[in-house]
Length: 507
Length: 126
Image: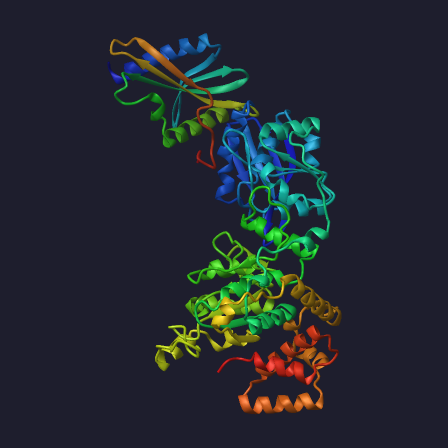
């Protein structure tokens, strides 16, 4: 007998449907899997055999062939265990063939027949819903994350037996709460645990971060140890505009694939903040591996990637960031497969001005030789620094600032200003496949960043006195545009440009 | 006891045991170019190829461990030979393993029958 069902696998961040055919015939007993299955899938034979037996069914002594189609997609992971087991039982007449053919099943089986969670359940279920399948049988632990999918019935199961029960009787063992919700307010109400209210002083740095958030600019903070660089960066997501529904689903998909959603975690409603340690490898940063997995740049998609102690990162890792910063995506090419992961993040870096950390400090003298300072800074390449729009110096707090009970502005207030500035940008850049000022190219700069005669004079003198390059010039314009947007100006005024000039690269 | 005589004695015992359990014995000691099939029987609609292992004492371990991958391969090839020669198609088949444990006087202590002891795996019959 031949049984058919559907399952799915993940390529990049998208789910793909896999058609499964399970055939039983007489002959010398065997169990074969065909259709470009990797080792973990091949091993599913032994799991399926044990799970069927230990669920109280008989494993057929027959020639069993399982086909996974299309044959040109590489299949990986244990998610095919459940469909194979159900298919074998269906081919023996223990499960309804027609009902099984109309839905999708996925899940890894334990030897005792219980169903274990899989990676990437959300993208696979999204693909199933798009295809118009009737239902999805999935591991109970993956239920929460898939609840955001519309138009498909979700059947969470704990064991093979429950799955068989459902297909035969349409009775769900685990009764879930009402499935689909698309309440946008959930996203707007999400509050970050960190707030700029807790940061005393550092008004210049906070202003700079606000501008960076408003325009999506990359930023580098330079300052002595203990001045609050990390604290400032950690709070950046709290002033970024609330996620849109699509963004939230996209982030959740990525975390589902990376296996970073813990059980019961549903839609991710906060912008991610990733701060990898400086010993991270290139693959850890941009993704990859024999079976490609998303790296930190992808995990920071729609959020913030924070690199503390920037010069300590290996040169390889920093240079590999150049492409994703430019394209907002990472393309990994391996012998069998080419994958693209999204990587639209804001890059925030922090570093000390010199190895000892106290160069230009108001209180403590620096103990480094000029040569040491130069060595330290030369670890950052010119092309890399070119991609950073913003440079700010973070100073240590003075006594009165440290002891005074000055509180900062609440993140919520800043966020409102940032959101307003973002709206202006989106309006202006509509239909141009970009959303923030930081993404503008030469053409857009010409269109939207024209200067008055007075501003032009200021720009000329800045270029002359500080030897600013062409790229530096367009960076200045972009930042000035964002400041103007924050102030609600139609055209860049001289004072907006003057503020932008403060944030140029340190010499 | 001589190895060959031990084997023959074991196969005689096996025949008795299997017939008692409802197997219908079709052939014994069937020779092919790849080796010998100890017993060919019918049981519950299956054509069963039974490999008999006879052991005195447990000095050399159980008979179960004696059927290595290589031995399985030989048995599978032999079975294919048999099916081909007899022109048998679309018949459910099975490989069973019967392991007999004798004491030093040659009396049967106990036996172990493994139904469907192994299966054909990705081309291991070539």
